[in-house]
Length: 119
Image (cartoon, rainbow, N blue to C red):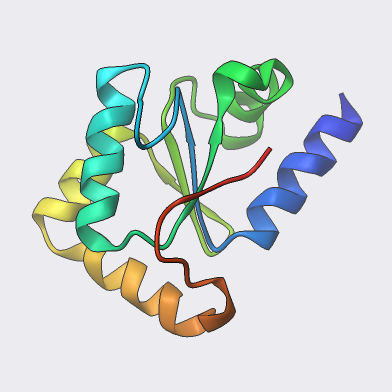
């Protein structure tokens, strides 16, 4: 499991805006993941994602690292932001848009035209 934790830490460090979700942005496998993708896409399509359904080791270990039991999980600039409810609340208050834009400006080499899948 140490390798899994190291891999998770590397992913979180490497991708400034990272969504761990069920399914993909085009085909989410749960309503909460679909909602998180919609909110995030309203801020920017420049994010990476990992489908936890095809990565069972992540599905098991990430909740321990984040101290958060459910999915989706949004990580921005190396920090755990939260799940669907927190992402929605931040978006409704305008906080998420600001955070995402600051992060995109900070990491211009990680700007994408659409969400990219990390395997």
